[in-house]
Image 1: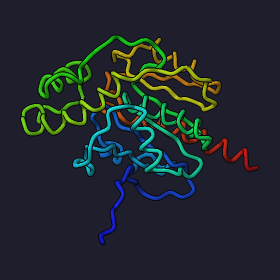
Image 2: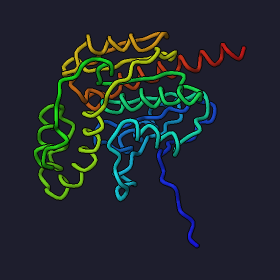
Image 3: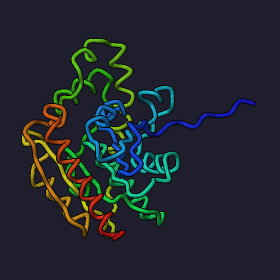
Image 4: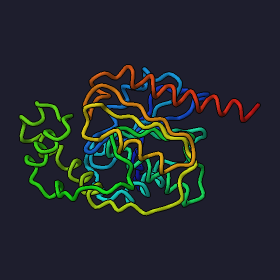
Length: 256
């Protein structure tokens, strides 16, 4: 009888046992590969990039099409999380990191020491109705590229790559577009909110994250559009390192 190998929900960078563990949730249609590059540069954390089903090393697995299903499956497949740990998410990944944090609270499990969200409005704000996940493969890819960028030209130039990439992107947009925010008590987790000055996500919609936690909130914007963190990664990584440093400082003060 062959052993069944469980899916790998995270891909890890260099081990740093004394540092907080950083879990990075990908943007819509994204994979873990983008954040594995960060493992070399973010030296005050052990980086674990989240690999959602249907992409990258999990390309042959069925996709999941709701935020709740993704959060539940991630917690079942990736936990427990060694403390202290931090969640980071960009765009759709911010929503998934937030709801995963709330799912941890509902289960009575330890929460992240810090939540870092990027390029996504506070989830409780009203959203304009859209149905991008119902578009055909090429129309979906080209529409998202026009709205947010981030899709390489070489992908759009190859029909096989368009079909392959659209599968994960469609699943994430379906999860996003069918998401319904449930009012709950604010979190007790500090939140750092990041965004691009030229992004469609306005400063006001980033500031609204303050309403979702009783802890400290820091909002920072950087030059660039929706994928500002690709355009000039160094200052973004410094901000992330600062958030991780605050976790280490709090842990040190707690144990003194």
